[in-house]
Length: 351
Ligand code: SAH
Ligand code: SF4
Image 1 (tube, rainbow, N blue to C red):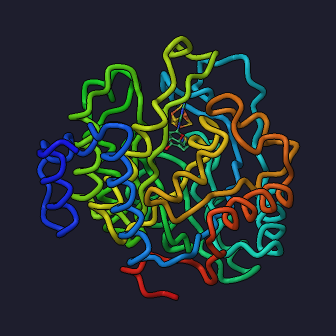
Image 2: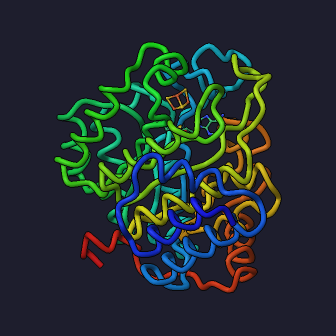
């Protein structure tokens, strides 16, 4: 093991603050002993803070319309090759009821940035889901006004997932035309002020992304003191400008996840669907590198194949029951149990 790497790892194990340069050294861990030691440390921090349980979040992808044109995403508005759909409030509530009956305690409502749904409509979705059972509701619907974030929170939304996507401001501007990084961070601040459990995160393997900027991603998550961080590989979609770009490197995704676990011991970290798409055992391995959450798809089968953010998304051909069975098997395979309760952040003592 490289002596510099060893000394940073030791610093990390003593929970001392890590600089950007320290983080880069950890992200440079070489396959073999260095990576194994990094993953071992992340796994031990996960056990200590979250135990041997995995939290499930059932995700309903209720609209694939999007006003944005992100270069990496199959839902971008310039992609004319996908069939667009919008689920009605009733269809969303039905999907949520099915998920609750399957045992889910968190429902995630995700969509493209689709202003067709005004804030009242989304408030209705939230309150009608809450009438079924006191499950946690997470929103992942992109950028809205401060007032709307407040109204959605008042309607009962508990959490909000808005990934900062990349800490590299230039790359952000290039890949997300018409949006800007400063405003993204402002939205995250509004979410915090509105009292949400806040989730953010980034992709790994965007074209031109450096290890320094990945280190900044982790430092931003730390600075935001997020309750959740979604870190997954970029996967190219054929009908986007990034079609020819290689997918994120599996090992680098795992290393980023592991370092995030070290710096954010209390945060919920999902083994993302994207990592499960990149590698057949991606989610199992991610669960052993710091992750403690899985977000199975509970979108009705008739819609899910059209929610193609990236191609060959794991679980696209299944129905909600089959997805749950598969995820339960993954969890058993790595010797964990399903968590009970809503799985709020340890910092929010609502359950
Ligand atoms: N429209 C909302 C939520 C839906 S997109 C938003 O953008 O916040 C959800 C996530 O999908 C994004 O945060 C992004 O990180 C991820 N994503 C988009 N395209 C991707 C791709 N090609 N590979 C991997 N993840 C992608
Ligand atoms: Fe729209 Fe989100 Fe995809 Fe960007 S990442 S195009 S905002 S769905």
